[in-house]
Length: 68
Image 1 (tube, rainbow, N blue to C red):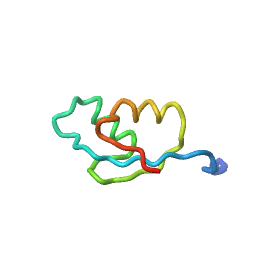
Image 2 (image 1 turned 120 degrees about the vertical axis):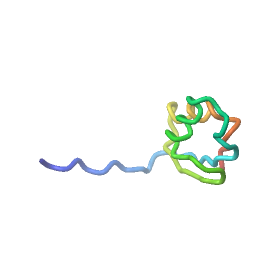
Image 3 (image 1 turned 45 degrees about the horizontal axis):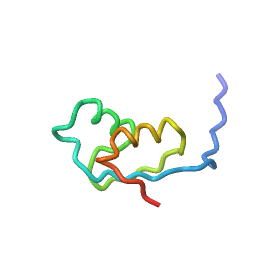
Image 4 (image 1 turned 60 degrees about the vertical axis):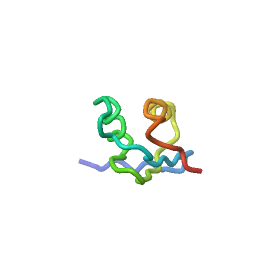
């Protein structure tokens, strides 16, 4: 079976940093942080800038910040 070509990540991106703890938060907020690739305070992740990611950030806005 042939491999698919790798997708170019040349589109816009956004970097998020976790600033708050997931402890004592509802399960859906913990799962959203995991979906963003964050699990410890101070971790940063560069993600594609699209409506789905923006919605996830909005859901846990009190636990993360967008880094320029």
